[in-house]
Image (cartoon, rainbow, N blue to C red; front, side, top):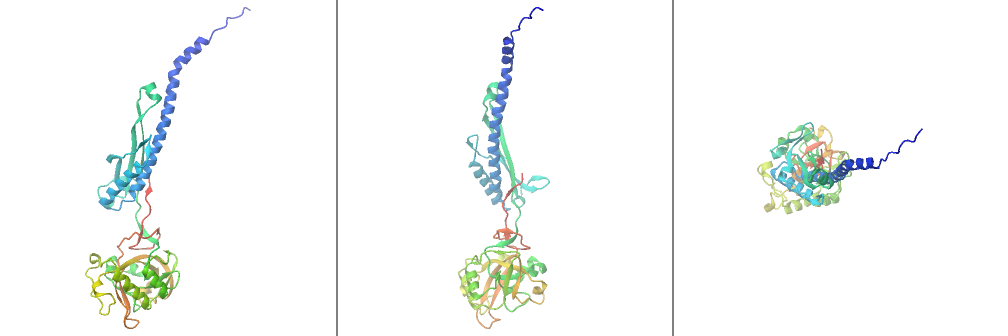
Amino acid sequence: MPALPRLDRRGTYSTLTIFSLPVFLGIGAITVDLGYQRVVAAELQAAADLAVLAGSQHLDGTAAGVSRAREAAGRAAARNTAGGRAIRLSETEIEFGAWDEELGLVSESDPSRIDGMKVRAARGDLRSSFAHASFGVAHIGAGGQAIGMRPPPQSAGAASCYIPLAVARCQFDTFTTDELVDKTLVLNPAGVDNVGWGRAGASPNASWLMDQIGDCTADGVARVGETVGLQNGEVSSALGELVTEINASETSWDSEAFGTLPAQNSKSAITTSKYGNVLEGPIIVFDGGPEYCTTGGDFNGEELIVGFAWAVIYDVRTSGGAKDKNIWVKLKPMADQELGFEGGGLVDAGVLYQPDPVRVY
């Protein structure tokens, strides 16, 4: 058989390479530019995440809080870069609203209902590399967005500062907020309108009471679930320390909450010119059963801590017999003081814990 001629395929391969080159370049352009786009998008997403967390913590139900949230988000974003440039959020890239688990962030203009915010961080001016040469696309875009919200406050489950007094939970179960505000609680005699000395985890002795009154953080942390040691007797040194603190206090009687300041007790130990000063702060709430609000508990022994209430001490008497030496206390269960550092309290009585803001989307 005669030999067949050999075909020269070099020209064929060269032709295929020439026609395929734009395809290869296009694939390379897409790969390089998409990679760059993803890197910048990740930078923008990280900035958006930080911005909503920084801003959401300021959403306190006020218009001023919304303004602070916007400013804080802008500052947080500006501390980051995307594509080598600092991130500047525009007005339209920050939105506020009410967070709903099903509907997401619902637009809201009432500051008291705003608890969430959305941040969009975008760059539309990223210069392309190969895509410009291959497809004539000079710029590409990238972006990230996040939604953050400030969880509602919770009843405090732990406090590192408390005035060494305790009040029974049944007060809050039996009476409305308005009724509690109208009530005056006293140390002596034991009865239904009563508070007692209280110390987390131990019995409150005189020297400890003086230290705790002078520095509400002296005893460390009190927690829900622990026990409180109770005492109802007069402790002259502790009463004297209360007088010292009230005379030196810069906090005044809240007439908006409690109405007119009651007349000063005729045997009051508070300096007359200082009457109207108050000592206020968290006190322990314990669960000792309904007898503390019906027949009167004995305020001795130990009970279980279930929360913290905001109390205001406004008058003290240190003279007379044991039952004459007394303190006069008002409760302010609507104080909403965010002094707790853990949630879990079983009584909502004016001392709250504010959880950190969270990213929800």
